[in-house]
Image (cartoon, helix red, strand yellow):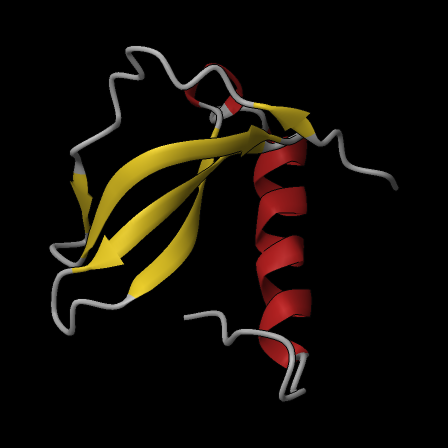
Length: 88
């Protein structure tokens, strides 16, 4: 499967400034993908910069989308390479 990699419209995204799980503050939308939007984010616990993908709320109730999103997370968590950032 090829994910769409379209530059996100960075103007007035309502999620900018939102803190997820008390840890990741969403900063700048980077791109829209088939399952959601990717943001630059700040890890408020250590001040680090990271990326966070947020599932598209309009599709969040779709079981197939939930399955694909979870599967994508598990695949990324299984990667162990010095040039691939860790998924938490």
